Length: 161
Image (cartoon, rainbow, N blue to C red; front, side, top):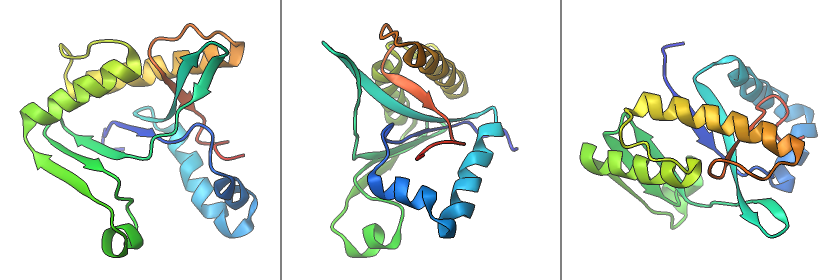
C-alpha cells in the first residue's frame, strides 16, 4: 500500500512439510496472508527453473539475499527466525554500499531475466522482473520452454497445494 516493490524468490516446488502445513487448519491464517499478497501489483512470488535437455526443472536455492533500494544488501544462509539468528551456525554478510548493492542487483537480475538492467533504476528493474516472471509462468503452463531468463511467477493463492 506504500508503493514498496517486492520480488520474493522461493522454491517453485515447495518442501513436503510446507504442503502438509497448507492442508493443516492451524496454518490457515499464514496461507491467507500469503494469498492476500496476490492483490498487490508490486509484489511477485517467483521460482526459478533452469533449462535442460528434457525441458525446465526447478532450481533450489538455499542462499538468502535481500537488496533494498539499490543501497543495502545482505547475502548468506541465515533464515529470519530465532534458530538461525541465535542458535544455528548461519552467516550473512550485509553492507550499505550503493555501488555494490546495485551491481549485485544487476548481476542477479541478468541471470534471472536474461537481460541487462544496468540502465534501469531499482523500481523499473523489479517491474521488469515481475513482467518477465509472469510471461514465463504463462509459457510454463503451455509447455513452452523458450523463456527469457529463468524466473517464473508463482501464485500466492495456491502456493504449496
